[in-house]
Image (tube, rainbow, N blue to C red; front, side, top):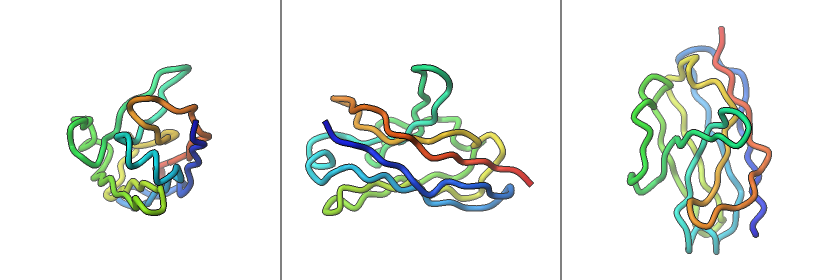
Length: 113
């Protein structure tokens, strides 16, 4: 199992930008597809997207413009969030698609004036 730790969230006004960071491991990035999720409630998570573009949330456009990036050698992935809208508010987590790792703490994004 790989410990996942997210950071970079905060409070930002509409139209603002954030870059979220997820620290995983180089081996995890090499052997799995990583993704960003937004926590809904309980065990329910909403997929935000992956770098390879296979899994994309078509509702991203109402939240902002999102780009997933990776630093494979560092075992890190990033979520660049631009043009943020209030609908993007939530706690964001990273994880591998298969196998899943234990959920990390996530990082809170709040879009408000």
